[in-house]
Length: 302
Image 1: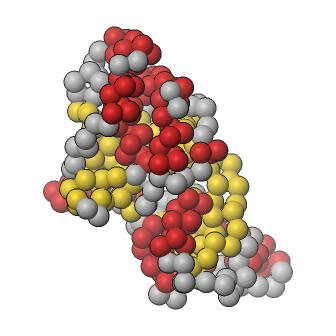
Image 2 (image 1 turned 90 degrees about the vertical axis):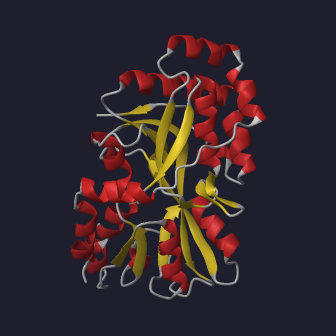
């Protein structure tokens, strides 16, 4: 099947009835407060923000996430009623600063923004890239720069080096709705110009399925956040390799509803306090992520 035919799947709207069905099986977990969060909550900056945004204090907000990205968000193998990862800890730190608690709603990646738009979630903190296209559906507050990695089978037998003509004739596994999908699709003219077939896409709902596609030999590569790729290689060192790192012109952001500017302002102010206190840096180190990827918060909106 050609790329264009496969990519149509990412354009289909997700029916609200599907979201409702997912919510029936959603595993919602309230996470414990860490000592670091307690100290943050008592800081002068966060105390001032709680006074400025009293509507959040004592509330419970819902964070929609796709819990299949080890290091960022995943089920705790020791306690499947809890989620763990950098994004979970970051969300809890923001909650501590502003005085709210969190529950978590697991959905497929393509359902993250529809879940937010439908009012079933208040936030999306789930390793989601803040693009201008996605900013049509939600406002984003950035907190990290994006570097993609190229995951391949051990030894890189197809000699794939990135989102370039080395992908021609090969199969890329990607998540439905990911920014890498159109980037791979756009290679078709370049492949034709060098006399090679265009790449094919296999679309999945989460990172785990994309990684399994390479392990099973159904796909040749998976291009995504470099930390996700590194975690996959760490999990399967005898079967997978990272070919290269690719710099993309995107940032990772927190999505908030477009009709809640006060919530957006509160989250951005709290994120500034979290970064100022060094909490984001320590969390990146805790989860073996690149501490150099921190980005000063900025808005991506339309």
